[in-house]
Image (cartoon, rainbow, N blue to C red; front, side, top):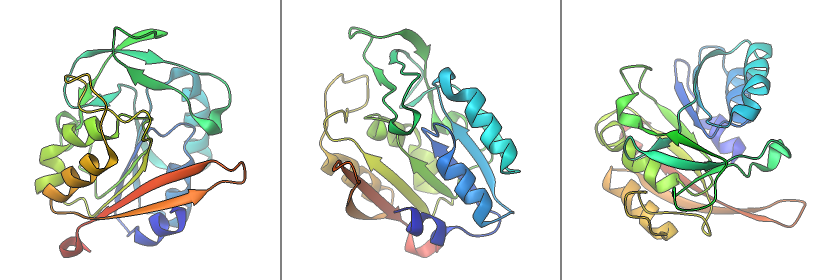
Length: 208
């Protein structure tokens, strides 16, 4: 999936790296093309210093948003893990579940084009919040110039929008992206550890 992500980038792209962690995709995009704007979204303050340093070392044109993205503004619980950075593990939960802290989320449509330039490419790795994030970008994805959405999906954690408080199926995320005019492909990838990762690649052919 990394190779496909890099192959789809174009000069002048605005890449939204959602769930940026320490900046793996952000730095790869910057190394691939100099004329790329990075907007990194990462609510886990435990990795912020490492993320900022990596973006500086990559000479990226970047901006960091520390609020979690969901379908709307609301108070949510956040489980934070400071160790094992590559494996992620920090994620949003309902306030009724065990959590380390409370954060206030924001919808992507409130940011795109206002606080940040609108995206042309998105990468989402949000430990189960993928569908809620896509809902929060409804207007941006439906009417904007975003050509590609790359999404690692976490089926056991995947939730419907958090106002519903229920879990979702990957097929619901696929269907939602299709309503915005995207063609969606599903991929699996096995890591050396044996863990199987699932990815979606959504693209708008008319914008390619």
